Image (cartoon, rainbow, N blue to C red; front, top):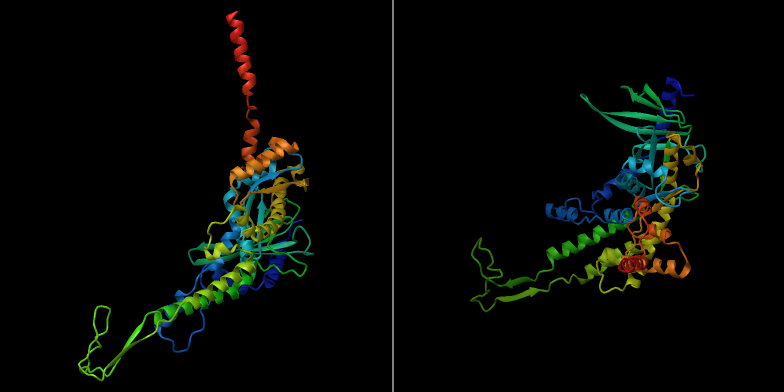
Amino acid sequence: MALSRTEAADVAQRLIGRWPDQARNDKINRYVKGDHDLPFAPRKAKAHYLWMLRKSRTNWCSLLLQLMAQNLFVDGYRATDATAGDSAGWRHWTSNRMARRQAGVHRATLKYGRAFATVLPGDPSPVIRGHSPRDMSAYYDDDADEWPVYAVQKARSFTPAGVRTLYRLYDDQAVYFLAPDEDGALSYVEHRTHGAGVCPVVRFLDEDDLDGEVPGVVAPILDVQDRVNFQTFLLMMASQNGAHRQRWAAGLELEEGEEPPIGPDRLLHSDSPETRFGSFDATPLNGYVEVLEQVLRHLAAITQTPPHTLLANLTNLAADALDAAEDGLQRRVGERRTSYGESWEQVLRLCCLLDGDLAGWNDTSAQVRWRNTQSRSLASVVDAWGKAVTMLGVPARATWDRLPGVTDTDVARWSSMPAAVDGHALLADVLGRQDAFGS
């Protein structure tokens, strides 16, 4: 039974009071956008000093987030009894254009450690939408439960008076729309029954553990990002103030207000035998560069990122060496594919339920298929699976979806094509008909 108006407003008000502190998420969002905390500056720092501080910010957080997200693409959904082609759940995926929209859910989960997706009735398929944890929070009776008891979403409405914040409360019966009044108290607007029987919100977790810690990709490297910015600042300051040789002259007689005749196109001279000339040694920058590279190596080790991705020192690496360098990244990506895959399977099962497909809803063994993003040549992959077919007796069609870039839609289309013609049999048939015609 749906909640009454008073109950919906009261439940939403209580849950909003438990809304997670967003200071952490706001800082992560700033860092991903490149708005980092500036290195320390003296209270009376000059304008050029502050300019150097701002220009020293180099956004490695965004790069690492992109590197992980670019290895996470769902390419298919295979039901338990499906031998080839797409399943009913995959139809809902394509109807929602999730080939493009999945990246937003993945990036939010990587960025903050968690994200959410909602599934609501729609035409021609249930509607899938992703939500950032800055705008949605879900509440579970037990953290191990598959479905939450309630979820609350913040939404923004543009009105003639300006932007207005609205709220939506989700439970196992309906979605309740609520609006705050001038005092902040919520008032019921309307509700829409979804009929799922479960709260239609799916949670995505980045790195789950029994302590409930889900740091995400960005939070563990905030301090390292600050160290990179500081070392970059020191390198820039040394380049500005000490990398060029500074000339000096002692005992040089100048008229009042006259500038010293120093410049790259000038020859210093003096008529006085007491004048002495010299120059200060330039500050070597190698030490600053080495320290900066060392910090980047620490960043690569912490995040299991291939060092050549951060340092751009890829030179004449063999295929085996390249695979070994990317092994840590692929294992890290594999962990997320397992976690995110379970959530996507939950989303597609819920789509089947709302579409009246009970077989798809009860198919808890169905699995999503991830795109192969490893840097291996197509020739080597085909050669390996070709040997599996010829030497181990693996069915040829079972290897189609193992090829890089092949989707379930491609597999279904190939399966509907006629089998390849046996060239030898065709030639024998043509020659046989020719002999019969000649006789």
